[in-house]
Structure formats: structure tokens, C-alpha cells
Length: 177
Picture 1: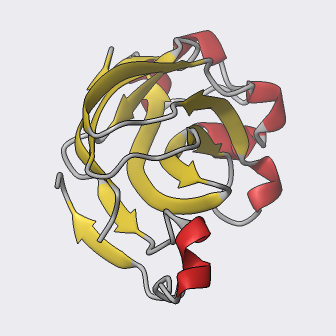
Picture 2: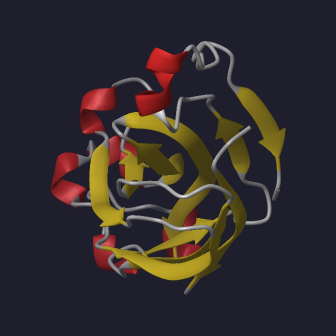
């Protein structure tokens, strides 16, 4: 059983211009006190074929976390278009929201993002060079892919015989928890 459960994620300002910061309202519950911080990251997948184009847009530490319900807004800058191949800017990509504890990722929420021109004429006859200020992103927030990874939230108890579940068996769900 996880010590932290995500209860809701709301994508704010969606759809938006490509160059607009991302904003996510994240709600979660903690069912057992944690001594250390949770690390939340927002990662933009710049290319399906090459992860070197991925960009960590934001990484924040939250905590220590006591038992209770929490809510915060994670704001992140837009991806740097100069670090994305020109042919990968327009089209569908992925945005990942992850949460880790003690360097162990235990939650990943994936969203498809559709980047396209804000004008029908530009969509039908795209210019050779991308006009980034005319690109609009639409995060498909109603169909997130949630993956949970089992981790040991209390490694200090491991010496007393408590074993963590093997990390190679993630569980996935479609939609909100």
C-alpha cells in the first residue's frame, strides 16, 4: 500500500499557447507520516524516438509530509523550442507528471499533448519553419495514464524484516483515481 495517493489533478489554462507556462493543481493524501520531501517533476517528451530531447520543466520538493490531505499548484515554464527537433513541435507528444520519495519514483501520470497551429489556414498549409508563437497546445486531460510503482516509504524499518515490494511490477490505470 502506498503512503501517498493522488486524489485529483486538474490541468489549468488548457488549451493554451505553446509558450504559456503549464499549471497543474495537484491534490493528494498522505496516509502515513513521511520524514523526507516528495519530489514532483513535470517532464516534456520532445521526441518519441529519442529521450535526449526530453525536458524537465520543473522539479519541486514538498514536505516533510504528515498525515492528511494536500493541494498545491505546480507551475512550470513551457519547453524550450530550440531543444525540440523542428519536425517534432507540431503533432502529438507526451507530458509526464511524476512523484518520487527518497529518489524512488512511485507515481507517473502521463498526458497526451496535441500541438497545432491556432489558424485553419496554417494547419492546412503549414509553413516550412514553425511559427512557434502561433502554436497552441491542448493537453488531453480527460484521459491521463496513471502508473504506480511500489516502493518502500520507510526504509528505516527494513532492518526489522519489513520488505518492500519488487519495483518491477507497476500497476497502470486509465483515468483518474
